[in-house]
Image (cartoon, rainbow, N blue to C red; front, side, top):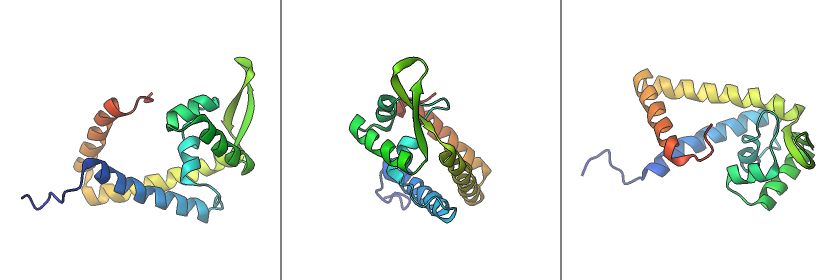
Length: 148
């Protein structure tokens, strides 16, 4: 048996560093005053298009029910991270758009992501980091139906 084979599947090996990064982001957001933001809310928030998104699109992309997405958007709206505005393409519809407070949280999270990625690159080296990024981009082609 290969000593490097610890029996962990690829999904778990991908999840563990993701979760570590996520915990760092939420700790940093809390330190910056955004302490009422949850991972469940973030899964919806990060899918909001620059011009706003319909709730049904957010639910589909987050792979949750429309009711769950509505609940999370309600929470985000109460905390002033998002706002609902009329959809200019359809007077009956509303868009969820990032509000001022949400926009202020984005660079805080982005700076933490950059810091974590720099730490990982320092540990793995530039070549391995590039290979990892390339492999994950290739996997995204077959795993992410919402890639742009």
